[in-house]
Amino acid sequence: MIHYKSPREIDRMAVPGEMVALTFQTIAGLVHAGTTTQEIDDVVRDFVKDLGGKPLFLGYNGFPAHCCISVNDEVVHGIPGDRVLLEGDLVSIDIGIEAEGFCGDSARTYLIGEGDDTSRQVLSVCRAALAAGIDGARPGSTLVKMIEAIESVIRESRLGLVESFVGHGIGRQMHEEPQVPNFVSPVLRRTDIELRPGLVLAIEPMVNAGTGAVQTLDDGWTVVSADGGISAHCEHTVAITEQGPRVLTLGPGECWPPASGTPGQ
Ligand code: MG
Ligand code: MG
Image (tube, rainbow, N blue to C red; front, side, top):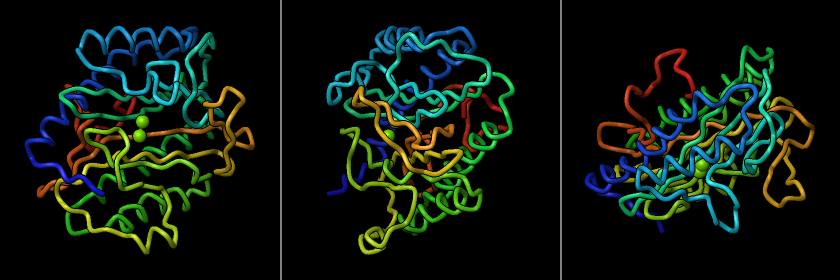
């Protein structure tokens, strides 16, 4: 069952959404060569506590950290630890926070330094796919049309579209109906829904340099590309309103669509 939110509830969802964005703004300066992913997670832990929010991922099915940090060939669900970030790394960070009884969920991918052509392309296609999805999150459209917009950006790039993980409805729970895959399947066509005001979705394309095939490491969490190619993950929590898409996971000084060159988006 889909839980549609009232305008007032969407305003409340902007509270955890902004907390997520503020956390990204706080850690952005740490995402550079020489930092360990544990140091970033420690800052996320302390900052979210100071904000009065609850990190959603800690303890979720036993996840052991406050955010997910997935570097290079890691696609999603990387566990922060003693890995030292290096020049040229492509670093995807996923943060979820609960506050006001609602959830916010967002992922940003950072390229440390200039990177190579492949890493720049993977990141720009992932950001463009997310932007296409957000632009399609309008009343009167359908879930399939919105997802077709995401899928076509990735397919046309000839990069790998990760099919094994999906976006989702979000509200009082982090994961609500409907599922939001990044490609259109026959099942999705059969179960398509109209996009109505009050629907809130976490839209989150994942793009690989090679194929979209993935596997999970022995730690039970870290998802990596099957062929070792690098990967990016970009996500926002987006409400469908009468006026169009409202991105809830934005912070002070941020807007949607982002100004070109805005870091982290
Ligand atoms: Mg997320
Ligand atoms: Mg999500």
